[in-house]
Amino acid sequence: MINKSLFLSACLFLSATVFAQKGKVQSAWRSLSDYESTLNDKPDTSYLMKANRNIDLALADETTKNLAKTHAYKARIMYYVYQYNLKQETKKLEGTINDKNARAEAAYGNAPTKEFEAASNSLEAIKVIDPKYFQTILEIIKGGSGASASDDDLKLSNVAMQLKLESSNIAVGKYKIKQFDQAADFFYKSAALNLLLAEKIDTSGYYNACISAQKAKNTSKMIEYNKKMIDLNIATPYNYQTIYDAKLTSKDQEGALQYLNLGRKAFPNDVYLMNRETEIFLQKGDQQKALENLQAAVAKDPNNAQLELVLGNVYDNLANPKGATGKDTTKPAGYDETVMKAAEHYQKAIDLKPSNQDSYFNALYNLGALYNNYGGTLYNKAMEKVTISQLAKTQKDIEAKSMEYYKKAIPYLEQALSIRADDKSSMVALRKLYLLTGNEAKGKEMDEKLKKQ
Image (cartoon, rainbow, N blue to C red; front, side, top):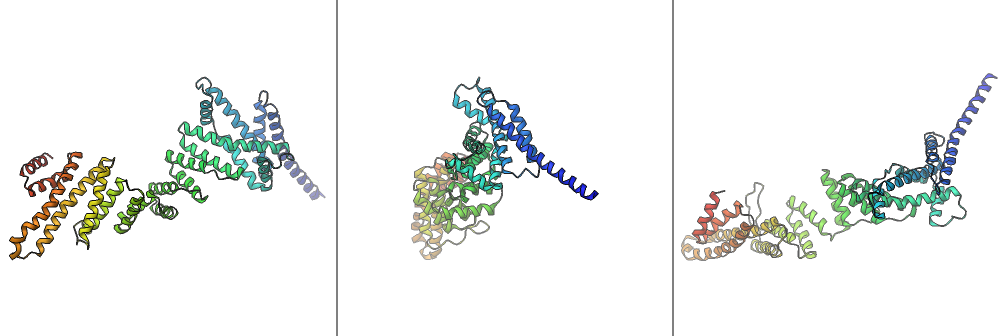
């Protein structure tokens, strides 16, 4: 008999506890409704604070924390708290910003967003807890079942639509005051809410999130937000480029190469991705693959001086290969043709005149050095085949051919020196060429300059 009474008492206590916790949800609703009734006159925030205290108690309890109704009230309460803070911020700015739109942007940028994010999170929780109820809210937003909806459902759908709209306003406000990290989050949230509530992919929202993350120099967000665009099949070459650069910054070379390869497959004609791949081929010494990429890039961008310079450099390296120690190795078959190809592209780079002075200097110096080296190679190759009996007869002809290229080299090296007046390599090459071509005065002049180095 005693045991039965104890059991009965325990059941009564449990029922009372559950009822008490559900009472917190009901109390939150009552205070929320009281607050909403004051919105058209003078909002009484004491109701709002009471609603917030009760809904937090309900969310802390196991029996009510996973009810869709609990999160529906939480979303409305948190949105109203955010709205109150936003209005206070707007009033604060009335004396300093006269333009209404500029004032609104500044208020959105400055107002605290903790409650806004809590409201947004509650919406997402409703979808997980009760997908059927969430679908009802979506139908109201789309205008499909508003006539049969309850007052609470209509109020929640209105808050949901406001969250979708204002997330973009907050993002723009944060961007304007250069809080790029938070701007990135809210552009992303705006796009996510569009997907959640309108079931549409907001390409511009995701893109603006990527741009803001880049301005914030937030590597992890750059990777996350750009990856989202790839996952949603709305990527551009920019998304792959950004992830590639961000992963390199994070010292994740393997990950960088993975996204570079994915980008090249998705956008095989994109010059930026092609150039990054070319750099890797060059670093690995795979000149032929680099050459193929560069030729394709030049075909698409024929007036790019930098591409012409790199292409000339690749042909130069192919014509004048070096071993592991940096010493010259055997010249390839088709050496003469390869040298002329290098000269052709160096000349195009010079004609296009890169805006970057270092690139312009390199184009001039490289072409001068190419002609100088070619003249020396021609002389050495020809002399190897000459017998002692033929030497007197043919040496002048051989020297004349070499001299042609020595003379060609001089003006390019002189122009290079005019850009970088203290460049020792240009001075050494010019001193030698002046003396070889019989210009002893200039040779001596260059020797004096070198002594002052």
